[in-house]
Amino acid sequence: MNEKSFTLIELLVVIAIIGILAGFIIVSMSGASSSANDSRRKADINQLSKAVMIHKTNNPDSLLPIENCTIGGGATPCSASVLSVLGSASILRDPNNTQYYSYSSIDGNHYTVSAELSDENVYTFDSSTGQYTIETLSPIIPIDGVCGISAGVEHSIIPTENLCSAGIASIVSGDGVPYNWICSGIDGGDDASCSATKIGWIDTGLGFYVMKYEAKDVGGIATSATSGTPWVNISQTNAIAECQSLGSGYHLITNAEWTSLARHIAAQPSNWSTGTVGSGVLSRGYSASTTYASDGFQNTVPAPTTGTLNDVYNTGVNTVGSSGIFDLKRIHSLANGKTVWDLAGNVWEWNSDTCTQGSGAGNWYNSTWIEWSDTNLGDYERSTAGPNPLYTSTQNAGRYLGCIANGNALIRGGKWSNGFVSGVFALLLNYSPANFDTNVGFRCAK
Image: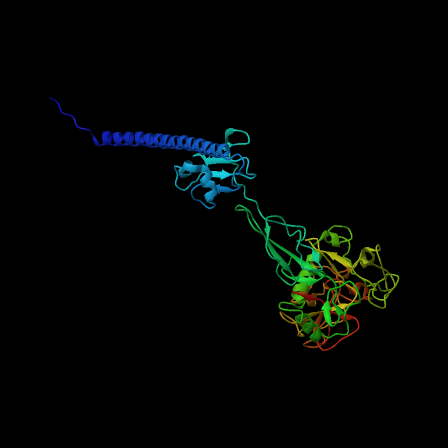
């Protein structure tokens, strides 16, 4: 008799086949188990529904317990009253010991009993229809938090309404520069961080907040308000102190912040007379002059009113109006839709920095009024405080007057009668931090 043995390859093939067959068997058994469990659930729901029917028949004048609960356990277990209604059927349990059958009645007359099936659909008996149904559960869809219409605008008081258009609003925090809150997502949705400001402050979108208007003296407090005229006759030293007194993080605007804001303004098409960046002119604000420009009239005092559509243009001597020439427009727009008033013209504004005379990095050129294109400004001044790309007073960028003494303060923007000297890049370096003048004010930032 010839005896043959399996080769190693044949053994491996046999083992593989056995593994595949075993997998089929396991899957089949799993499916059979699920089917058996669902059959039991349906039978149990049938028994539970009949138990309640029997109770109602025996107690026609009694209402059913008004509850929405799970039978025998879970997060919201049914009360003893429900279990009493179910009688001996109250011991029925789902085959999966982490799930529970459910009972619900909202009016004491009709009721439902239900079970979750293996495919996560729900098998329910509803007494109001007398039918057994299988309901497909809608998938849980995450809802992202979305900021409401209170975000990104100015408020006279802490906002409490319209905080979120989707999601759940947190408590609003902050002093108004800014106000902050969270719109929390629902069912796993993403949270949204929301913010707004108090009246008179704007988010520049450049990493800092700034007064929308030049600071006004309101009861001895530096305030960004429409009414009144700018707080002048104040030294740089005192302007620094007034801004700091507003609270933690508040400060007199720095040269870096001012320059960043001015360059941002110059990069917005809406701030150019033609609607194209670099073409035409920027507006130089309330600055009409017959000495430093050919405007046909010259102001002698700051603008009389601020903040409304009737105050946007310098229209005549010490006069403002709702329309006028673009050069004398008082507002500039930011990319985020915010506007800032009088960054050019009206009154000069202290920055927190000081100058050191000289050439090279860190030093400021000493000169009379010159253009930003002057070669003496190419080693430091233009990159630190000037327009980039380069603009001059031809585009209403403003001019430069140099550091006449070490330690002098930086003053920006121009005043009411400076004409072409005025502009968002205008820079004056001839006042010490202790000096004050009727044409120099300030603006705080945070």
